[in-house]
Length: 527
Figure 1 (cartoon, one colour):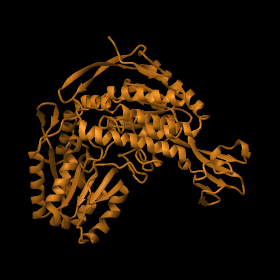
Figure 2 (cartoon, one colour):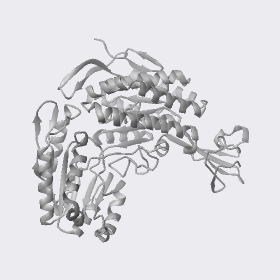
Figure 3 (cartoon, rainbow, N blue to C red):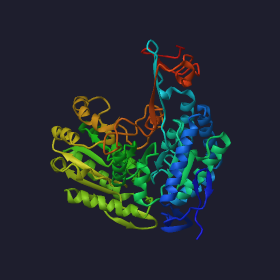
Figure 4 (cartoon, helix red, strand yellow):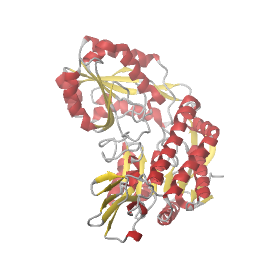
């Protein structure tokens, strides 16, 4: 049996004593793909950690410019191999070659790599702080071990474990990465790993700066995030798996950053429904159905106030859900996962008003699904009724009045996003000012009159939020340089001689343009 090779300790090699193997699946045809991938055992995982630890030590002496050059070289190589990446990602995920993969996700991936390079080069991210009268200086710097990145299945490029945002942020902060490929697109990850390693060699970084495994048994994942030599971990995936990893990492005192679950509530105020009924219904379905609903920012919860017009809106939305063919899901587990979530919602009092069943068709599909529940029932059982259905499936909550709408917001869990649709001419402003303070602390990103799908790679973006959307409300997975701070430690120097200080903290500004906090003033001047 010929397995695809793993990348460990600077070498492409056959997996040593794999404990199992697997094939990727073409979800559009429901067929296994021919390539066979190994499941790595304990020895291989430990070897990768040890090599990553050694690389972390070596990287401390590498100029920051080399990290920027690596990220730029990697981005250039991705652009040059776009055709190969698009073909294999389409085969493994059924996501459309165009515009999704080639025109959307691939440019986003290279853009964030280049933005990470810019942040690494400019040095502003390290928050250099100098109190010159007492000669105490501090800055953010790399961790003391490799960063383990667990990529999700729904973004084979932009969140890939060896090319996506977590990878870019970790490397830009000066850390080596151990990438655990998502088993939904191992071939795509293999191509990225090959291109990344070529860029490592070209730019003179330690060979173990990037390493890649395809899969490990679940218990080995727990050992990986809790190992003494791991610097930190980043995980994007299910709440069930994420919480197990978090428990293991927390017990060992190891940082872990998780993106797990979000229903992304959309509150639609009455005057907005009156003003642009059809427009909002169309926008919401488009957002719900984007990528077959397999977006972490998919609007899985809609809250409206009881009225005859609301009932008409719900009927219209249900018709749109019913009249559109469901998209192909990413994996064989997709329909079962959505079906299980729908059953939980039903058992908690929700009623299916569109879809609700697996569709026997070409590819793995689940009917576009819409459910409804009254506000009182939601408030009495908010945990179960915020179960995430990872597909084109949403729950409508019909509140008796605005007071109950506000109460629904008060019992919301933490989410990545929350949206309020309101009247464009301000007729809902009074209600908005009452509702917003309830919703604002429950979400990472607050939107007005805009669907939540689509996460811009800009420095102001927060792709994070309170638990259970993530494991920590103070960090973002998207947006540079802020996302780099997850993979950094605070270095403080007290009365250290000038020639012994890192360049960021010496009297002379190392770039001439780097921003530093000197004696309480943000400035680009020398000390």
